[in-house]
Length: 112
Length: 114
Image 1: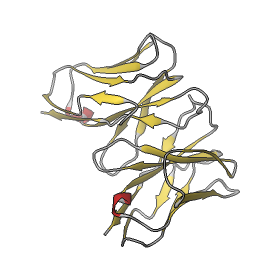
Image 2: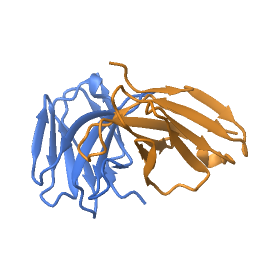
Image 3: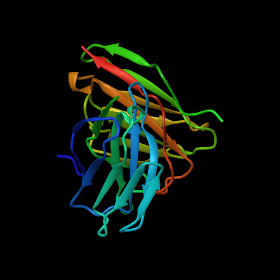
Image 4: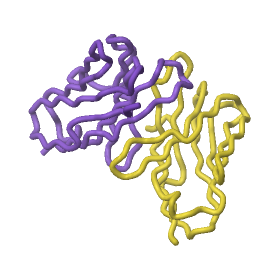
């Protein structure tokens, strides 16, 4: 059982569409991170959210940390084929430093 | 600045064998973490080393062991390989072990156990 549940697991959309990926848990995290991983590579950090209710924007990507610091979402506006990849959320629990707990991932495909 | 490197890139072993995977941390980073990523899943934390000492361990059996060297490079050793050990093994280095400190991942070693 994953401590962090991501949904959906797979998403196939057309270029220009919007999408939201969810990361949920019953546990509280000190911070939550979002990564993107491409085939043959390790995950690359996109953003870290620390404060409950925090919203961060990275170009067309908007990240939100839940008020109770148990969940997070990633919203992509006007998706492009270059957004294709595996999106992973990961949290660090209190007193666990940066020993991360990852979600199962959302595999996104954006078709031209 | 050199990124995190891992060797080998791919490895094929048979059940019962032993394997050693290597990781070279990013310059100046004293913390290294190892993760196992099975096909179609997110990474699972194996253990973390900080200044040559094991700092924490995930839910993995003792046949998974590690080392961190004075230059902060690291090894992951797996004894008595099982079929389920087939996975991508990732190492990540960070400047410190603070929760919000960025971890930089290597490209991974793909291990196949036959």
